[in-house]
Length: 309
Image 1 (tube, rainbow, N blue to C red):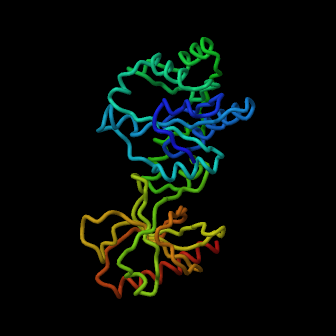
Image 2: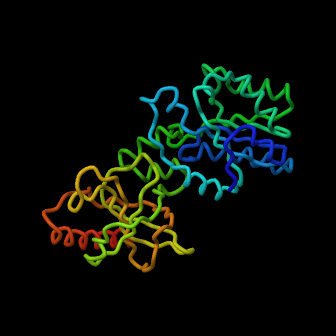
Image 3: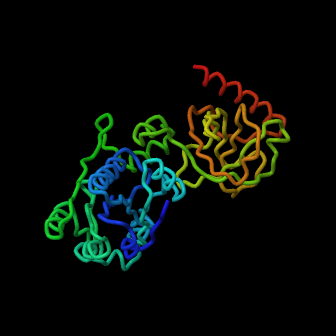
């Protein structure tokens, strides 16, 4: 995937450029519809679909205390976009200068740097520019003036609730990963690189991959059933998400210790997408290694039974 880092870089993209614009944290079902509209326009007009987001999240600049923890890191977002067929993304730097730019001036830059600008696709309620002065109506006026199409995608509802990153965050925090998966339109997963650990689990007879989750927002700590696709196969297993209080000191970063039932091999340095399934139990501190080993054995039995149901 090609990742651009400035509006000026849009001039290098073969036009007409079909822009899907938004803060696509989670890339949920609503976001997917915004992106598909741009893809369809690009296909119809032999252009290029570009997903344009902002880095950091605008609230990190405008109201840092209100900024949400991100559901997806940039690497996972790139992977998900590639699966959707997107080959180009623009991470527009969001700075105080960006925040002070009027909606009209922002539009002028897009028109200037795209050769040409074919369409803009956004969520219908999306606002942008200084003081949130830009909305779908301004976009439509600009489209008429400069000759590009505008798609304002209506919200998607699930069980009467609008699909949004905020609702998904609430579901993740509460541990309702089934709901999060429905809203996302895919299995809820944590993504990260496999790092070297202390190899204590291997010494106990349960080798694990130590995954450092890229996401800022994590579900409740504890033991989960998991599925991981490796070399084209979906491997089943079990994972502990948390800080391993039995064997670690306070203050360590959360990790996802993944044990796969039928896999043996070197995963160090790989990025894994770990799909979390059933919650088995909360993370807890045991009196020692022997008690921990006994509990892991019980957890494995519980996980296998859950997969058979």
